[in-house]
Length: 437
Ligand SMILES: NC(=O)c1ccc[n+]([C@@H]2O[C@H](COP(=O)([O-])OP(=O)(O)OC[C@H]3O[C@@H](n4cnc5c(N)ncnc54)[C@H](O)[C@@H]3O)[C@@H](O)[C@H]2O)c1
Image (cartoon, rainbow, N blue to C red; front, side, top):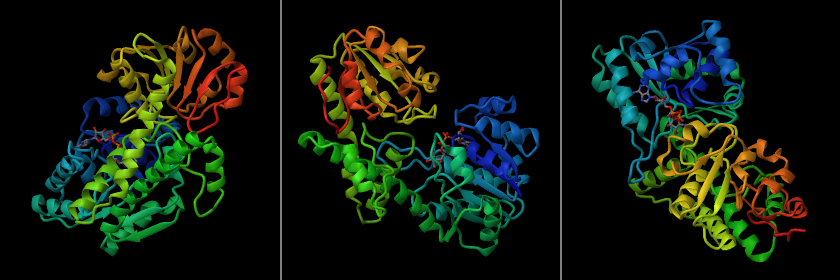
């Protein structure tokens, strides 16, 4: 089928590449000329495992191309996906101006029946607004259907998630649109759930909020573990073995970040308030998440006494491993907080350095060329993202390089017993402290 995707970011680009990989003809549209130019020149502007190969393969097969023109995309496809940002406005609402602008632009060039699919994460009832907007600006009176098709990919394994999704949610009203959507997704051989538009939109916010809730739940348990001497990993294993609960998303740490969870939970709270049914449980999820980072920083302060002039190494800047995405990363917030307190912070991340250099809040940090370079002369090491590269570093060398061997593991990457045997003063989240040998 002929498809276009408007917005070629983490979602749009990966979706476009995977649609092309199963045989569709795909046009990826973006209004950032530098992004389009670099894609046309064969340079992929984001890091996502396996993505570059999929893009190269499908560009070579002439199933995938890039353009800055919405008209080009709409004219040459049966189904038009919208994958533009839906950032958080200052008051927690979703800023839907990107979606509204694209809806208007699509309407302006619509000349024949098209299915307009919202893939961006939006509050319930946005589909109705998109349809109204397209109707209003639809100069030629062309027929169209609006569909909600939320995306559940995880950055860091987005290609794999898109090729083999747990489920595909299609929120639509018309049989014509549903048939076309099913045809697009047929090659993926995954379960398809057809719903009304409002339910599809709500599924995405409810799913992300539930995952965030699971994280905050285990983080709250980790605080109780620390206070009582229990081990949060064992507790998570014990409750996660219950198939009704599951072990995923029960990893205690310094809290969730990224471009989705914080804004989606804030948006779900806002829309629930607007609808007159405030979802107050989610406010507690937010509070626990914020307190987890604060508790961690308190532990660092308690151990180092004062942070001013302390040389602190930070491993990890991205919000999770296997991505270059640093949006709303807790690691970045930690670095910014420590810089504010006068610490000398040296950072290293396998993929996030380029983007992190542009963040003004951490401009005072030193950017190291490797994990080992970052720890040279450090009085403390903070593990803020659980990259497997860090797990493979020679810890003996780390210890020798550091001025004082103190490690604060915000992602429980290392084993407390091993760290103690190596002679580290080791702090992790919700686990037993073992005195260094
Ligand atoms: N990143 C994720 O893991 C993820 C997962 C599921 C859902 N989502 C949702 O998908 C949406 C997109 O997220 P993202 O992470 O891909 O964002 P992104 O910022 O990486 O990409 C958005 C792209 O849209 C482009 N754009 C903006 N306005 C445009 C316009 N008028 N015309 C054409 N292009 C335009 C931008 O230049 C950018 O390249 C958001 O609603 C997000 O919540 C994201």
